[in-house]
Every structure is written in structure tokens, then in C-alpha cells.
Image (cartoon, rainbow, N blue to C red):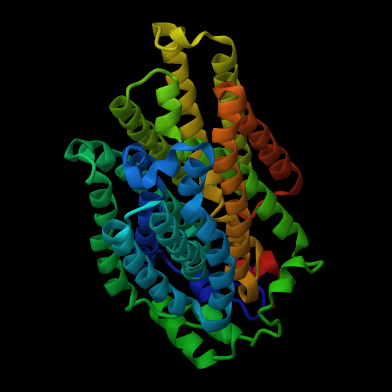
Length: 458
């Protein structure tokens, strides 16, 4: 992109810079946090298989108890994302970049070593969710504000792909640790502490965002950071726009707020319901406990493959097209899985043809959901909100999406208990269709434009 296309007061040096080691370092340290988020959120799906057999956690065996425990971290994220996202816009990107990892380390340790009943585990995971919600807001924001235009989508997609890698690792480690017995669930959580400490140490060296510094009037510091990142710098206008939560609902930003909120909400209803109950769903389809966990690990690998497709094509196909394709694939696979669960006798689930169809449909779901909305949910909020509320917008979208996740996690066990697995899967199908429609109607294409061009923040 030429400088002439960049609005006055823009960051053309950052926008047109070559993608270098510093960009990859910032992306890697952000992605490492997202990896830990994916690991921790997914590992509860495996841990529940063990926890449900322990006397102090008997409430997990009720539909509500299972849903609450699966959703515990997600409930924390609902509040953490919007609160700490706003703090990130007020106090700076680096402030929360450090402190969210500190909270993550402390409460992961408490979960692993100090949880002895349903209540303590629920509370510790809920507070952990505050840190994860904060990381959702800050990790993507800091990448987007440093990235060149041509590689911004790819770097943001790399960031979110780490979630799927973390999820796959969680299911794999969970399967490998199952033979260790009733204490295995503690080891599953404890393993997340060591990489978190390493990430915390290296995040200290990441500079503050030049865009945020310019926004709050620290022009010289912004120029120094821009010079460090790109080798040159520009003069920057001080933003006249204050960081305000209510700005999300202004005439200028309401379309972006509605789009991000509804498409992410719809996606998370389906994703979390399928993702965290994957072992349970596979058990209903006729697999043993160990095979159900192994099957979940295999499907998680296909989700990683889908996220790699997102990285490869997001800057070629564009954000809107790849999001719509993802929702369409989710809807088709969930529709046919629901029909099979409703119409095919349970005894036939393990028959060759039926089993192959079920496996193929799960693979389609995993690949398309991460190729589409599971990748762009971390990209779109960064590109449609201005610097003054970028982290707030990401946090708000995350919080609304957590409501969707909680709905999926709590409604699915109840629907299955009352009406069967097929009805539960069709419930997710309906929300996939909603996500597709909202993307087609409200979605915009952001490929190839600077953040200032997209938000007219000049």
C-alpha cells in the first residue's frame, strides 16, 4: 500500500514495513498466551471424565453441574474480556499483556493443587477465566497495531490458530495421562504452568503499542517505537476521541458492534457445545471412554489443519468470504449429524458406513469452523474498531460470545437429556445458520486496508 492511500496521521511506516523478526516475536508471545487459553479451556473436557467419578465432585454428574463446570472459565471470560479490554484502552496494551499472564499462572496452580470439591474448582476456574478473557482482548490488539497491512490478517490468524494447537495438545496429553488414575486431572492442569512462566518473562521485553501511545498524546514515544519496529517514523496527530465503552454503540460503530457480537455469539454456541463435550458426544455415538478422548484429539488435529487454511487464505480470499464459507460448512455438517442421530438406531452408529459418515461430518465441522469464524473472530474486531476502543471492542465481542458459549454448554446437556443427541446437534445447526446470515448481511471486507482507513480514525 502506498503512503498516499494512508490517511493523514496514519502509521504508514508500520503499515508498509517488511514483516520481520520483531513482528514474529510479538505474534509468537501473543499466540503462546492463546495456546495456553486453548489448552486450559479444552483440558476440562478430558478432566471431567475423571472428575465425575470422584466423591467431592458428584454434582458434575448432573446436567446443570456438568454444564456449569464446563462453562466455569467461560463465565469468567465474559466479565474479564470486557472489563480488562476497557482497562487496556485506558492503561495501555503492555500493562494487561503482563498482568493477565500473572493471574493465569496463580490460578492454574490453585486449580491443580488446591481444588478439592466442586465449589473450589468452579471458583478457581471462574477467576482464571478473567485472565483468559483479558488475554483475548490484549493479544490480538497488540498484534494488529504492530503488523504491516499485507501480513496483518495472516499474523492474526496465526495467533488464533494457536488456540486450536493448544486444544489438540490438551486432548492428546489428556489421553496420555488417563492411565495415571484419579489424580491425572491435576497433572493435566499443572502442565500449563511452566510455559506460562516462560511467556511472562519474554512478554516484559515487548514495547508499548505506537498507536496507543499516539492516541494518548505520547507522540515522541510513539515515534521511537515506530522507528524501532519499522526503521522509520511519521508525525502523528493526537486522537480527539476518548476511550469510552458507550462509543461502541455510537452511529459510527454500531454496525461493527452488532456484526462482531452476533457472528461471534452464534459461532460460540456451536463451537463450545461441540468442542468441550466432544468426548461425551463420541461416547453417545458408541465409543468407549478412552476412544472418545482419543477421537477428540484426532478431531482437534483437523481443527488445527483448518486454522492453517485460514492463515493461508485469509489475505487472499478476504475475511468475509472465508467466514461465510466456514459457517456454511458448520451448518451442513451439523444438519446431517443431527439427522443421523435422530433417525439412525443407536446400535447402527458403529456400523461401517454410518461410522464413516459420522467421522467425515465431524472432520468437515472441525476444518470449516476453524478455517472460517474460528479464525476471523480474532481478526474482525481488530479491524473494524478504532484505536480508542479497539481492545474494548475485542473485549465486548468476547464477552457476548461467552454468553453464547455458556448457552451452548448449559443448554446442550439439558437438550440431550430431554430430547436426545440429534436435537442437541440441530440446536447448534440453527446458530450456524444465524452466523452465516449475519456475516452475509452485516459483514464487511477489511483486507488490504490500514487500520486508520478502516475506522477513519484521523
